[in-house]
Amino acid sequence: MAFDKTLTVNATIQGTNGLIADGLGKVTLANNNSYTGDTTISFGTLEIGNGGITGTLGNGNVTNNSTLAFNRGDEDDSFVVTNHISGSGSVVQKGSGKTILTADNSYSGGTTIDNGILQVGDGGPTGSLGSGNITNNSELVTNSALMWKSVNLIRGAGNFTQAGSNTVTFTANNRYTAPPRSIPTAPSNSATAAAAGRSVPATLLTTVC
Image (cartoon, helix red, strand yellow):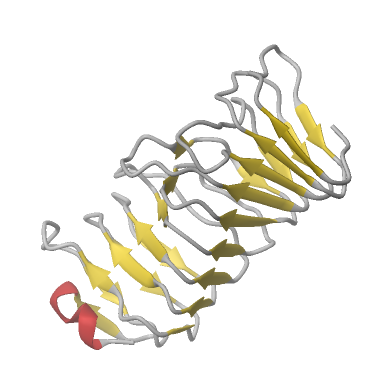
């Protein structure tokens, strides 16, 4: 699918084939798709959703060598992205809702959270961001049953929330300005502070920046 401007696909994409986005513009998938092949983003932006509560990828893996953006308005936990995302491209959380990534992703192009909530994990043993830097100007949430170790450099004015029963460890010297938070219903949580190597209990997370 090559397009050099802006294209919104309102139809449902089905079948066993994959989807290739290789134009310089933006392609928006506005409906809930069920194609089983892989998705490849070679150029431009592939945007999932158009600000509402519909818009999905297919069921296959995603090779992202440009920009993959999520733009949905779900206020609950209904938008879960199970696809594995790899490649040299970046991921953008653009919509006002919540996007939950449950695969152990390996993309290297960085993550930007401009709006809404980007949640990593859904309470199980999987869920990760890629290896690139994170620019968080809204909210980043982790919800994993296992230790979550972030080697990513995190910067921005957004919030970080630990929602799982896991331990979160930061290894980079992060530069975000809002203090990390822990949801009180997970009293066993602990985290390593934004400054690499410092460890504090969850009850003190709000004092560390």
